[in-house]
Amino acid sequence: MIAILKYNAGNTMSVQVALRRLGHESVVTSDPDILLKAERVIIPGVGEARSAMTHLRERGLDSLILSLKQPVLGICLGLQLMCSRSEENDTDCLGIFDTVVRRFPPGARVPHTGWNNFESISATGLLQGLQPDDDLYYVHSYYAELNSSTTAVCNYILPFSAAMQKDNFYGVQFHPEKSAGAGALLLKNFIGL
Image (cartoon, rainbow, N blue to C red):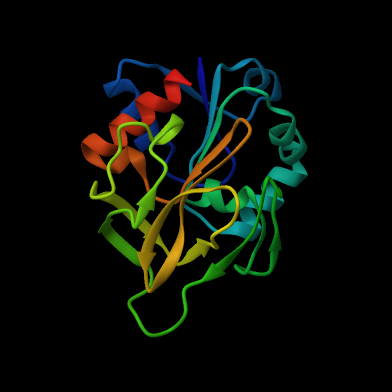
């Protein structure tokens, strides 16, 4: 079973529909027992860091996420919450990835919205089969700095972590559920981990 974390952030329905198109059912839940027993957990993301982290902490879901042993995928805000801190309302996050989430600097259109490809990619594991020129769909005003867990780099104003991985935790800044064939391949890879 695939569990999609319900945590005061949006986009759960799009993720569920994308998984269904691949032939996999999922459940949207914040029930700790279901999350612990799930074969895969997805932390989707459309929202704001501080309110999302407050919601997780008030329900003990922050420590539960850190205890998960199965593959966990953070999407957009989900990736950002896996970082150590976010400049969005000066928020302490989960600390899985040792990097800071920063707001894009002035000078270009923010949020970064639309299709973009990779500047570089380690096309193994979650990213197996993806190519540097694959277009993926982004909607974000904040980005994770490059760090030792970065597995793919995108460039919009500056280079940032498009994908990261540490142990059983994976994160992508783009929305695979809205990224056509390349996004479907990533979700297939996640299910197959």
